[in-house]
Length: 163
Image (cartoon, rainbow, N blue to C red):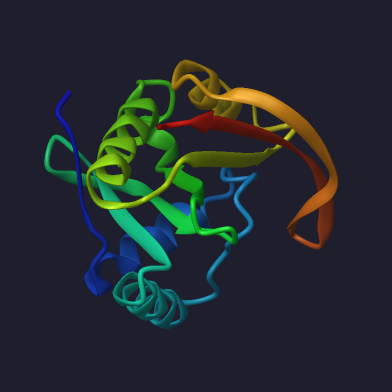
């Protein structure tokens, strides 16, 4: 399966709304309440890209948009936080791991990032597997760090040094 990344577009709003609001999608904190809201969020991401603070990409598998991956620049500015989500119909196919590798290439080629972090709910076994397969090391458990559907979840922090 051919995996590519492309810049997120406003036209991705409907697709992301569908993915994020599926009942099987449990561990991602964003649940847009409308396509209009998702479009507004994507506009903010486009501005964040222009400002050099965040870079989001559609995950394209065999020419179909199946999810999103991105990096948010933290403070200090040599640290970035990777996030991603994938349509449930494409889970367990290695797509997200390949997308993370492509995102790392973008980071190496375009940004002055030394450390990349991933944070996921302890219950999110799939994201932990992506982190491990991508060479990230678990560094910490962060208590009550992520709020999903009005419930606070403990999270694992994984990190990788790039340079």
